[in-house]
Length: 398
Image 1: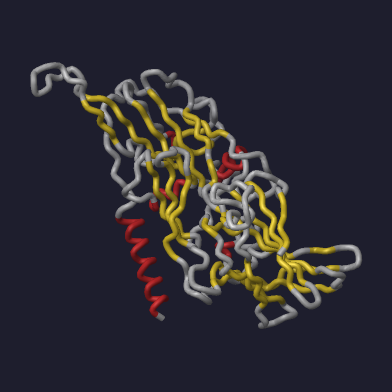
Image 2: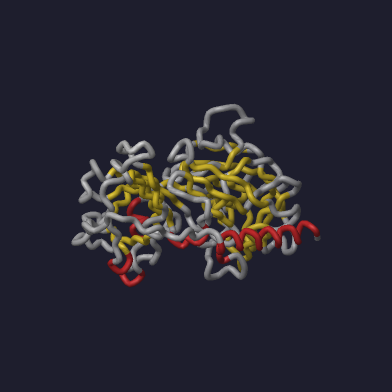
């Protein structure tokens, strides 16, 4: 009971932080009198097109950010910008001599500008434009640093401590299953051609897992998957709330700090369905995939919007998490499969190292767990790939 109370209090604190202190007021910038519009472009985020839900390529992001009236999903990209300029150069210092001035930084100068893909190249050659034609304009003479994020609705979760050097977003995978991406760019307005669009190259920040269920070993059977969820079987298990930190000593670095681990035995990402069919006959083997059919499932629809992919906070795996599921034939029987510590990747996503090193759910990586159901046992197999790869790079059987 105490853990549940603590959990509730933590959620309350995080919500207060998110909604009362995350929106840093924009600072007006002098020097925009020339009214030179800022143009945008979004570079590719990959080439895979095997899922309609996760953003896997440039076309996918365009579709996500296209207005619903034009056949898109109606989402958008948010842009945070800091502007730094030397002011007071030539003014007399304490001794009366001309000074070098002082560097002044104006934060969030575009007030989390919102851009969408309209395909209209009359304003921007890339087709990326401000919402409702609301553009932003360059101040000339200083330097810009940009932090872009998708989707723009994450603006409410940007922490007050954020700036263009270190950008922090509070993320709760229970409340959100959005494919969060970020991008970084800089522009020196004294040397850059300001008629050229600012290129935003996006990177995925989350990990994704998928759970498949099938029969093996000549086990000719059929059944229906009716529910699936994850559980921590011991203290220190899976984290479902975290802080994403983008930047720092490496401007492109993505790191995570873990905020909350649900108590042992609490159902995480609970999904319930009338039944997804899977079978094995002499000629076919059809698998069932959890977290599908949001319109049909009776619980967990919010976890079912990504074509079977469940988005997780990147973190170290500790072997203390179980996949739990039920089937129509089994009724109320709960089947439990331990998720091994080894995932096949380091924290940076690399796949070379010892078993003790390859124990992380890394950003921008997808992990597929296949539960093979035999007559006398359950076997677990994991395959992994980078976000934008169609085929898994290799697999591990436990």
